[in-house]
Length: 114
Length: 109
Figure 1: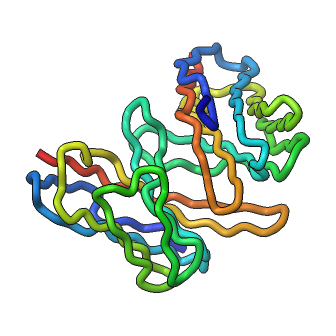
Figure 2: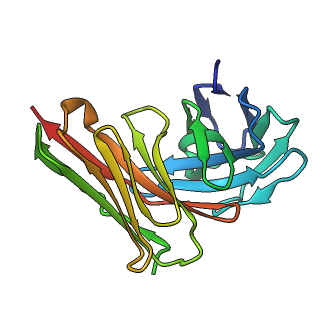
Figure 3: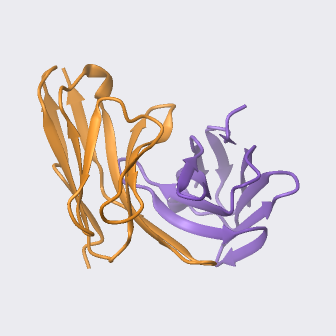
């Protein structure tokens, strides 16, 4: 059981370059998320997908796009990278019932934009 | 006022002590309350969740929710050096999850 996987683990981009961060989960969860984590800022939600075929903006969506390719996969795209997007990016998936909740995070992608 | 407030610490306590970590919140619509542990350079790991109010215990960890005061706590008994990490609270209302900024905890051997 792999849980949540993310690729790549590390990436260095030049300003203006584009890239896609990949995320996949094997727990049959409906909901998936992309967060960024910066020192002193905590985890901030970029986009989420409550179910296959739907996506919604989170707290900091500007400069990003997402695709929920199928139930397993949720990708995050930076069309024109900026230094302000230097961060650690985490993908997560979750499942919720009335009195139960589970959420798992991937290992993160460390992105540097120069 | 921010929706979720959490003291960033760092909090240093001796091994074996009881640790108390806390968050306050402003949105009374929050229904699920969670605590995550994050080791350095790793993703967060869900430790405990509570639906609505009350207490929940799991081994050395106890989570408390006081909805009347909009205050949640995580207690760690018999703290161990391996408990040294950043602890994040989080809350859900609908599809919206809001995280606190995390408290850095150091357990001193």
